Length: 211
Image (cartoon, rainbow, N blue to C red):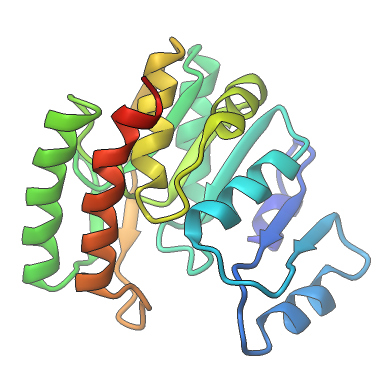
């Protein structure tokens, strides 16, 4: 990521928001950050993906603010597609694995894909109809949209992505879904049953919280 950003004509910064890692992640991140426009945010507590993403996004200072998963399942080069959509006037641009032009270089196991499709149907019914992949961790926001949406966000689980898109629509921001390249990480730490339960629980909360 660093090498790619250094070659671009625009100024950029990297904000690493750690969610209570208990290994050497924070130490290595701080070593990497020395002498670079890189900030590491960590307080040692595990509060959930949503909390960590929200903290990092609200701390970022750019006119365009992107969050991406640490494993770079979507290659950082795909950000150019999202930036192009921002130039078209869209306020929130999301990478998608669910469009015909999307390229899945390494697919998830069949049962994860099946559960994901079923979950998306439910998400479209309950919260954000017409969006085919809410969960791809590659989303770009204008500075204003970022501040408005994340300052209202309260979900700390993986359902954060749905909440962000629900809020974006509620606040009148223009959203575009863009096909991207993506590859599944077989070492992903996502726990299927636990995270699915939290997803369902928080999906039910979103419309109630943001009435």
